[in-house]
Length: 271
Length: 204
Image 1 (cartoon, one colour):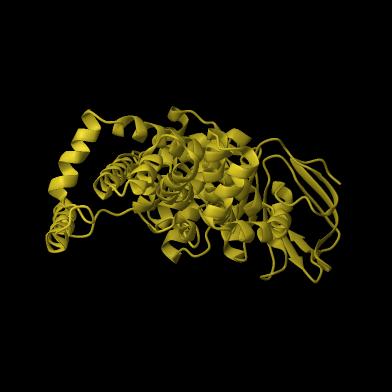
Image 2 (tube, rainbow over the protein chains, first blue to last red; image 1 turned 45 degrees about the horizontal axis):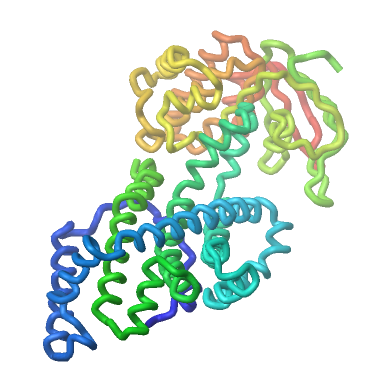
């Protein structure tokens, strides 16, 4: 299993220069690409010839359906999603606040930048283990450990956003005596929106992977817990069923929530 | 010093250790149009920023009106809001006022256009309409015709002249063009020296 611990580094989101549709081919290319992946998996399973090591899609598919209608799959996905949502909200809230403050105050930035570098380079696993040791094997520790892993990258993205705020527009808002609320809403928030969207999109991708590790190490429900359980039973088919189901749910959330959000945040740039 | 819409009694202005403006007494009477000229780097824009309240780091005193509007060197619009919203959100003007002012600057019917969809000349007109929407007692113009081609400068000069005459708001125009100063101003104030002071005042 690849450890998300290493993936915590160098995942600093940058907002796209402009929103854009898919390049040529549209959804057909994506569908064909997924079909190809399933085909490769099928061939590998056939060549391997041991379904205990690598079960094919024809085994994992029906098993997933069975776990969905008769097993705990839905409950576990719900528990994992709840942790993802809580960690995401905490990480985005604290990270955005701190990042904007550091982007605006070079003094604060000088003081906190070494901390930021330290936490950016701290493996996710270390934070998770420490959270469990210090807070206990409970929900609070799990959610905080995941949030703490994501906060530094949100800080970096939002700091960049705050640094990029246009000083000329700030002057304009001051001369015309716009209220602080109007400035925030109409002058600053639209400039920060692409950064929030980028931090959010990369954030959710990182957070759900760390949530699985947190569950793997110290929770008694959730997709990560199930993977841990079936790992001990050497049940590769169920490990794949739970993992792929959750990947599908997260891809759906990204396509339905985060991509439209990012497009809207950058729409005006298209002119 | 004469009482005016705005009165500045400046002792000095420094950037770090470098003095950029020396003692300057500057006032604008109600309805008066003043042009601020001088060589590049003389401190015209710095002085204008002090008048606008954007730079408070100076020695001296400033008495400024509550309602000031400014037309910047660049249009400085909100690119994510349409033309009408740029006027309304910034100044608090209602939709009818915004539409009327858009008409006055030659942008009738373009209220729904985003700044990126307007030409540079149109963006400048929109910036002027926004400044007018604030119903300012004092209008500050910081080289508003810079980087426009001569035909467009002439067009904007005529428009600015007309809207200023109609309103009788006091105005301060920063420009390095003698022709613009003579055309728009009742009084031309020239800055010079280092640190800059007022070296001449004349009425064209």
